[in-house]
Image 1 (cartoon, rainbow, N blue to C red):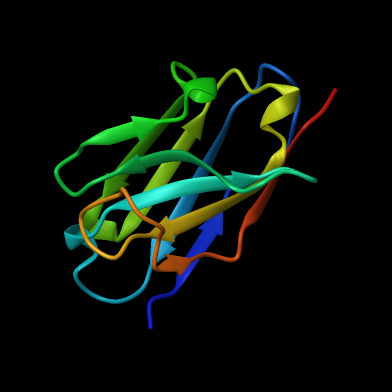
Image 2 (image 1 turned 90 degrees about the vertical axis):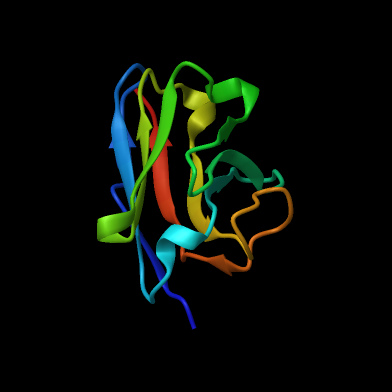
Length: 120
């Protein structure tokens, strides 16, 4: 069983920045694609960004140019750097690991989520 533990959420003003981290247990972290999702109140969960082991990255249009996903395979960790945060970025953010190194289907494992609140 793989465990994903997110950290780094919190309260930030519009225009501010946060960096989320997700530490994964188990071996072979580098073999799998990883992703960040979010779910705002009353909305469906959506993919924010994904990254494969080879560094192929995908972002939802609403965060392009503001968010950066990265991974450190030596630390079994994936990051989400969030800059220029907006009110509409408020959500619970979830880390996810996919079934393979392909990020085109639903993830296999999910973290517990971390709250990000953007408010003045």
